[in-house]
Structures are given as C-alpha cells and as structure tokens.
Length: 139
Image 1 (spheres, helix red, strand yellow):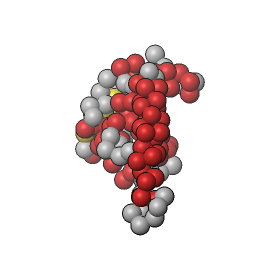
Image 2 (cartoon, rainbow, N blue to C red; image 1 turned 60 degrees about the vertical axis):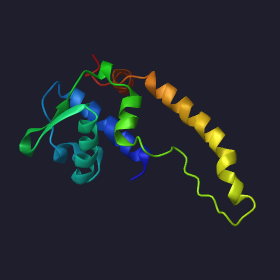
Image 3 (cartoon, rainbow, N blue to C red; image 1 turned 45 degrees about the vertical axis):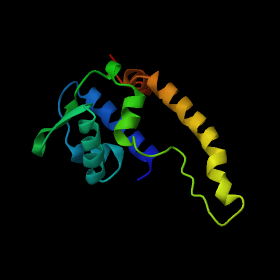
C-alpha cells in the first residue's frame, strides 16, 4: 500500500475515533466506514498504536485515541505510517548516462520537497483537519 493511502486511512481512523468521544471502535466497523478491508485498518491502527497515537484492545473492545487531536500533528501521523521511505523513489540505472546521474541530481530537489511537506504537516493538527471536515467532534 502506498504511503499516501496509509496516511489518508490513518487520518480517517483518527477522525472516526475522535467522533466517538472516547467510545472504542472495532476495526470491522472502521473498515466499513473507510471502505477498506479490516486487515488494512488493523495494520494501520497498529502503526498508530506503536507511535502512541491510539490505544487498542483485542477483541470487541477496539481502539480509542491516546491523546486529544489538538496534540497530534499530521507529521505525527505521517511518521507513524511511514517514517522509513522517501516521498519520491528514484531507481537509477547504472549503465545509462542519464540514469547513472539522475538520483544525485534529483535528490536535492526531492529533499527540499520532503522538508517542505514535513514542515507543513508539522504545523497542522488533527483538530484542524477534523474542523475542516465539518464534524461535530472538533473540540
């Protein structure tokens, strides 16, 4: 699954958990709302749990927020679901005159884009996102 998909699913999960005002949600219920298989929700929820953004309990108990949305930035979510991959992948071809140089040439541009993205995400809380969604849960 692509980073953008996991990221959007993670934000959706957190918004759903906020909307319940502390009532835990099961992965099956969230999967129905998101429109994905419950295994994907469990995987993403596990990433959010390891990052300290949600608390989970096995079985019917489900997941709930670990802290208020005002204390969670989009960068926290981004790093929770994929902190190891580069935003832009480059596969150089060592036997091509252009391909052998493309990674070094593009890395500075991609690095600047990555920094700009992370700076923007760091300045946006999930509370702002939920408010933008127009849900009553934005507190």
